[in-house]
Length: 177
Image (tube, rainbow, N blue to C red; front, top):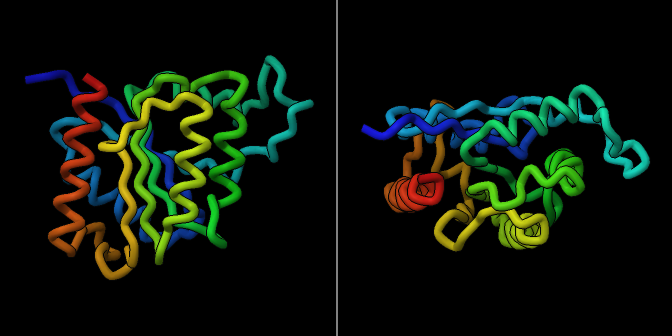
């Protein structure tokens, strides 16, 4: 049996009752034999990105976030679209990694679970590509109308969505090795 891989999961939503959090919980349950998933809950505590403050030693919260990224075998981002774009706190967190390169070639999966999500998903894909995140077509997924497919009990209730998530996770595991 292969060694368990450690994933850092980033929930792009800051809502306590977030569909994306419920999706991450469903994924934790689905992959318990393959992955240990740590859901990062510090987006709101990261300071606003300012290039003048992007120095060593980094702010404690920034340094902690970067350390979690470095230590993870892969990064799973689940996010809604907000106002046709990337939620600000998620973009802020990613901005803190541009100069330090934690995402560079790191196996990364992106799931955008939102009402529509296409524009936010495309925008975040461009950001992940420019910072050289290890994302592929097989490790990214758009789930429109997510609230109708994911329950508050952390279950994927739509068969097609569950199958698509399973395919993504299988491809992600292969990328991680």
